[in-house]
Length: 134
Image 1 (cartoon, helix red, strand yellow):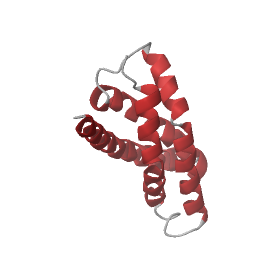
Image 2 (tube, rainbow, N blue to C red; image 1 turned 135 degrees about the vertical axis):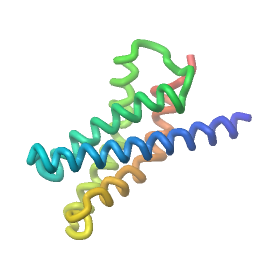
Image 3 (tube, rainbow, N blue to C red; image 1 turned 45 degrees about the vertical axis):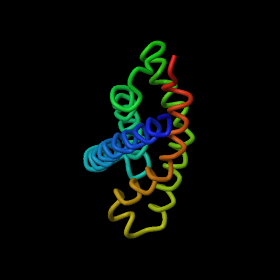
């Protein structure tokens, strides 16, 4: 029973992660096209947009019923706890972009690789430290 719940949460977390990846990529390209921030600063903005999206969806869909405390405190905890996974995510992205093509021509590939690199850490940290059951 516990194993099935864990597996179901991980699958839902992965689905939410795909939505977050799409938000990340869309905001990245939007920033690149409109703001002129460049590949690295645009990724900071897109990551924050994706993190906020995934927090909201994980709250509503993945870890239902785990809503202890104030909503803005939970968001801040989510961002803080997932910062290490985010750092790994960003480091992989930056390394791939710095390596040149095809990643500079198609930065979405580097975003996807970065997102996968932080998946397991972020799931465990979110489950244990952010969306713990009261």
